[in-house]
Length: 79
Length: 247
Image (spheres, each protein chain N blue to C red):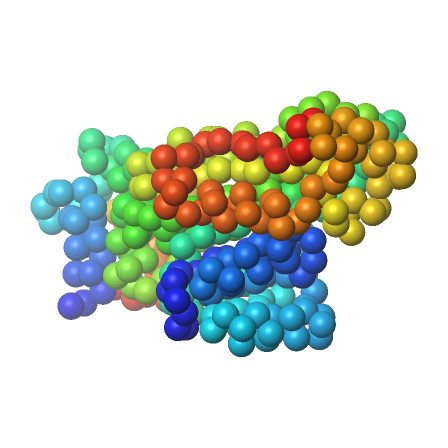
């Protein structure tokens, strides 16, 4: 599984959405991406990439695209 | 790690006093322990080695300065990388300080808050995230009656503990959905080095306020902490439980 596939799968599993809805997706755009869903997403991302996200990064993770940026810049995960 | 209970306690500040009693109580009951202390003396290492041999448990020591966020972050990363599952977190470490309001600098108040409030908040942020994934865990914060009852000279210490105890209640609300229990204990004056640092007349005043006319024992506080961590307390969360000999 590629990093992008793992990343997408974390969103899909967290928010029960399909892959085509991921581009442009932002925090609180959909019902499942609320504060509780956000922590589920963080847990799934941490598990998928075996990382421990810092609180500042959890707060900054405001969109599908921003998440990729954070993982690339802060956790050396390339997409 | 192999022990009877196969559970792990993470505790801060356990090289003396109440923390040391909690460390002892949990190891007696088969817990492995991750101990985060600002200093780790040879005597403390020997003490831990004796506990490990006696109770067939593991005690892993981390040097961690709770007044430094980077030190906490580095310690939490090391624990995360060790892949050990934390079942119980006890935020025990605290810094005592007593002085009249007019003789307490804001810098000093911030220093006390850094250790007594912000450090437990930061550690809880890390550890609760791991507990959320497993939908299981217990967090116990060491509060104080000084954070419940207004007493002269406790501007810094009392307000820091009051903040910690309110944080406990809020955290319990937020983490209940993940089956994580959060409680605090609020000891009265206890037989520790911290108590010895008090002025004698203040100590006598507090002892006279108790129904039993004596100081608490660290082991008595440890017993309550252990009870709150156990399944026997599985419906208790968001509570601040006084253990003060009836003040």
